[in-house]
Image 1 (cartoon, helix red, strand yellow):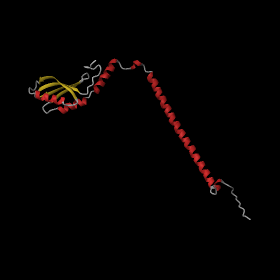
Image 2 (tube, helix red, strand yellow):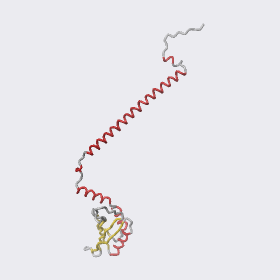
Image 3 (cartoon, one colour):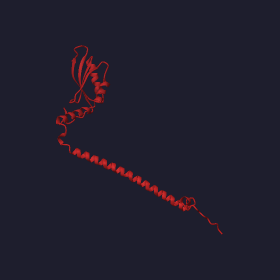
Image 4 (spheres, helix red, strand yellow):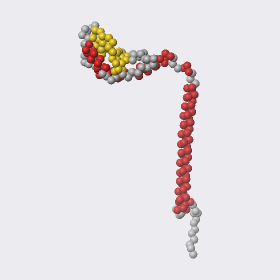
Length: 191
């Protein structure tokens, strides 16, 4: 006869696992994978909900801003004088002054001294006053300026004798940049 097995503690799930079959372990693995998949799905869903909520809030803010901008009265802009002043300042800032100043410096000769450089908002070039010991020195400086690619043209406007030093002649030049684009309504612009 077979010996009878008597179990006083009863059957618990912990006792059945070690003695369980491979089929039981496979079922437990499938249950764990299913639990992990459900947790990953919940995490993804909550992340997507948060992103959607943020996008909706951002869109609502943009729409509110567009409504507020549409409600601004049309006469709240600048006056005609203000618009003209802003356009003049922008035209002045768009002028390639740096290139013109570099060309002036490159062409400078030891005997020629630049006394002043005047640039005006309405002016499309620069008015330059130079002091030179002779006409030849001044003309050499003018030819050197004309040879610079940044300079579109140089015009000798005036010549005078410096009253404090009779050995110096003062010349007034008008220098135009090669990159000048005349704008509509600017002085000297063609209709």
